[in-house]
Length: 331
Image (tube, rainbow, N blue to C red; front, side):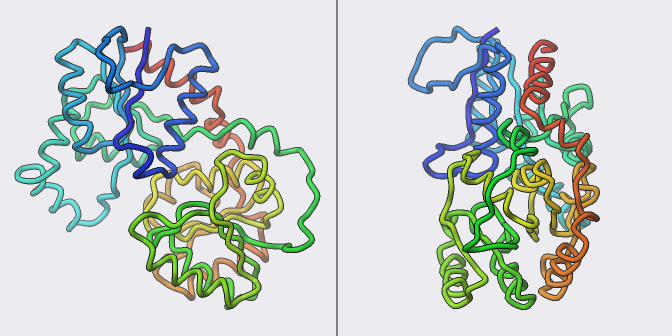
């Protein structure tokens, strides 16, 4: 069985946690012997059985429709918004009749299987997007084996910058690095920021840069290669992962830090209620006082905010690859 991966948009225009997931899953699935590769949109050959699209959006609409006409099995891996308020559900309902959701619902009705990262997303997929339960597969984000292998390894501490909290990911208002930096200044706690400025967030990034430039307890590394030893070492030397984000699905950085035995702080939003993040320290991402208090708690009692090792093992590449293998074989 040949499987072709197709992303929602070109990586040159958007590359974040979801795109890293596509790459990580491709590698993990190859390792267990699955015949999986990237779809070359310029290639006219059709010698494959499964089209695996990544991302719920209009760019994948025609690919899915034509894939079904060509008698391909179609899998869609998606991340959904949180429809956790009455207003958001009303807007969704209206859009399902006269807006973009109408086309997304048509697309989902055609696919043979859907994968989501957690039980919250699965419920939304079933209740709002009308995907039958038997088509929905919960497969968490895959974390590179390097993180699991590094758990017991000791590394020298960075004597130049010590006892720091770390936040990893594209710099943007959604991930809330600016408020996080302000909270660390307030608490006199060191903060290491790792990530590039997301396109369209340049003003936000400049505001963060000004703050970093004027405070010695803030450091900013403008992006590191995902899964690199350098990134893993920065995690290992950190005293905790802090991500008071307002919108996420299953943030990869929280999983990576959790696997390395670091306490985790997250925004008290829907995504943080999934089982894998049960022990995380939760804060109001809109409140500087709440974020500041959460940092104090994390630093004071780090052992209270460690993630469940058993749940994190589901994110090992051998386990996620086995889950996708089972999905493909059941089509």
